[in-house]
Image (cartoon, rainbow, N blue to C red; front, side):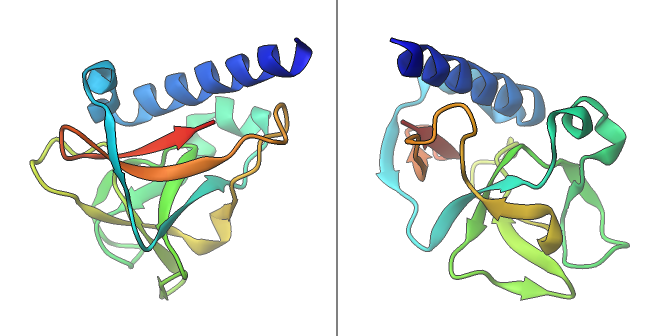
Length: 142
């Protein structure tokens, strides 16, 4: 009972985090996972709860692997990063989940800001990058 409650809380937290940082997820209830995203893995930001509450400490998702590149927006807590990692100039390639375009958008996040996905509240939880029925990337947690 306790682990299912923890998993529920984790799922809600992930949904809220993704919904706030990725506008495309506001319509996620209408989108079903239809296929895994090959060549990518779920990662998470290397931030503790205090850092996540302060938006100034959350790294941006950039349009190119350069500190001067335009920002796509704030990196979501769960990042869909290329696997094996593709790093250029210290930035890891990822999929921008907040895109409103009709095709996937590549983004870049500081490689040092990423850790493998791991839930502190539900250690058995797993995350898989998936394509949603609306054509956008998503993160499915179980």
